[in-house]
Image 1 (cartoon, one colour):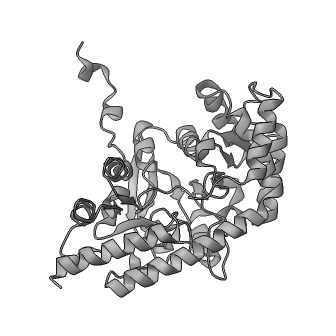
Image 2 (cartoon, one colour):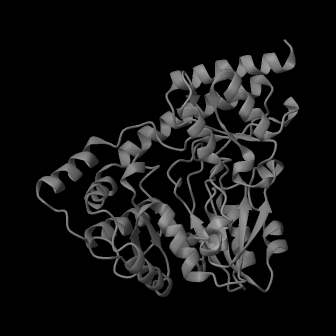
Amino acid sequence: MDYEKLISPLAAQMRPSGIRKFFDIAAEMEECISLSVGEPDFKTPWTIRDAAINSLQRGRTRYTANAGMKELRTQIAAYMDRRFGLSYDPANQILVTVGGSEAIDLTIRALVCPGDEVIIPEPCFVCYDPITSLTGGVPVPVPLKAENGFKLTAEELKAAITPRTKLLVLPFPCNPTGAVMEKQDLEALAEVLRDTNIIVLSDEIYAELTYGAHRHVSIASLPGMAERTIVVNGFSKTYAMTGWRLGYACGPAPIIKVMLKLHQNCIMSAPTTSQYGAIVALRDCDDQIEQMRQEYDMRRRLLVREFNNMGLACFEPGGAFYVFPYVEGTGLSSDEFCQQLLRRKHVAIVPGTAFGASGEGYARVSYAYSVAHLQEALSRIREFLWELRGC
């Protein structure tokens, strides 16, 4: 068999995730400390686990409605209104998916035709570019700048728009930089978008993890933007439910209807047991969100302070659970820095280039780990820098 001729060229050209590369190497090393994965170290709250266990004990293991359980979609609508001031009809504007990743995939596949351009601010999460390419769309990366707080500016957005622009990905709070877009930042973007036919994919999976005085604002809450925005969210980061594989998309009914058709044919429905747990998460666990947010905030401040003290300039992130220190001053590229740190000190972090070419010079460090874990990693990184500098 000539497999090279059989395999789709678009699929064959996909790059393996640079995030997993360092995690997989670290997993095979003894006494290795990994700060490479964006997964909460907290356990899923017991109230959620109990609800899921109860559903299994009652034998509730059948398929649900394709769009998700009605009760869950009702709770999602109430949550979005309560936490972010967004109004959605559970009947036709909410779709429950297998993780936020499926919601992103469905949004892009429902909207992007061959030749359509998708604006993707970078550095960003790794999936937007390959999914766009698989549809025949054209990814248009927009490099974000540290001096702008890694935010997308109205001027940068204007410069990237062409007659073929179909979709803008808005990945804030951002993985890997931790950057957030505040209301005035979003209003400037909305002003650019209102006279266009461009749809926004607003990936808000880290919406509950913002720090300081300002809480997350969704671009869909601004005048005239709900009708052109698909909001993607989920349970992985907010409720420490990564393995439950449950997310959702909210948006205009005509777009959600098409996304539902794709979901029906490719997936059928999201995991039933997970949906029972998610109902309780949305209804009863607001206090658990705040407890985890406060712990992440403490870790965030620890890492920013320590990296700056080491001489690795570190932008202060306003959201998510990552810091993005500048490592180019060591004389090493992002990849060289991370490879040498892993080999010499058995600490795994991710080169900024895993999140786009504009990530060169930076590294992503996750603080979704215990303080003891972080402190040991920081000690080893400090030793590594002393050796590099000949101290």
